[in-house]
Image (tube, rainbow, N blue to C red; front, side, top):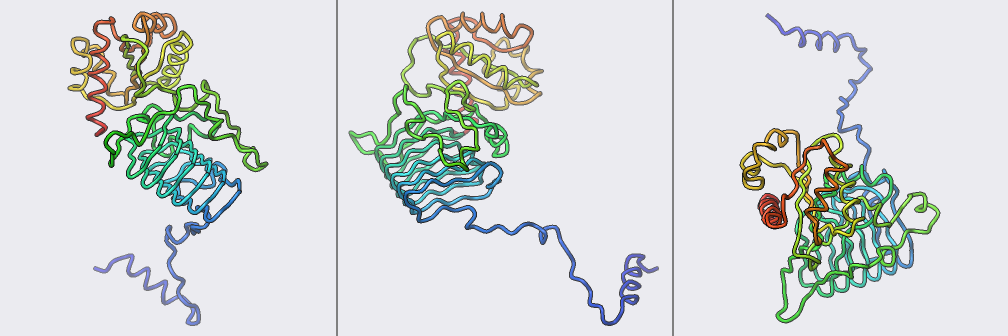
Length: 350
């Protein structure tokens, strides 16, 4: 018994005219648009303002090298970005799915978001950073860090395309591979540093088409205090559970708390299992276990005198009916914060 398909192929071959050659097979990968590396590179520029508009990089790798006194804006998401041998440059990078690596750069000011951030053989960099993992410096000096602060309409979608959460930002938790005894190779920028004084909005006609704002209350990434000295002994932990409005509720709660004079210390978005809930929620764990299956939680730490009471009032007034975990008292709040973020650091490998 023969194979039907083999007979059909044989018949097709016999029916083809002798002079007609068989067409080569077309595969999906043959039809992909060819990528020219030069479209994803700025090299050897001096005294120029250049950039890429939203949708023009679309997750490709990007290289910036040998640039001097340039303003460079990448308003799109990318796979990785390497920046080599640049001097006195202003650089904005939209969300980077993998790593951003600075090598042999000096006197640069940057705003960027990425999964991994590394600096080697650099000096005098000022970086407004959103980084999902611990930033690393090596053989570098006078590196200063601030919290990412930037907005344009496409940016939130680009974070999603890059697989980054706006709530996972360890911008101030720096690891120095090559510390020098008695010296500090890195520090934090002043808390009142204005991002536009460092990385100004572009003024060229092409790049002005991107509707950028550097106002703190519009920043896609919540502005946190990170490792800075806390203003009070009292903190409060809030955990929001996955749902249709979780991100919007988290942003609204941050706006309300900051508006009342409290400080956002740190944020985190991650999945929790039943055993994790027991460790963090303790005797209240059974109340929250069913909610963990819906998706990742978002945790917020607020700081300030009467932070617990202030947070409870806002949650009860504005989010009544939405189930959240809120620290019960000043006495238990510090334990709540430690329990969650110690667990989070272990999970994230920090």
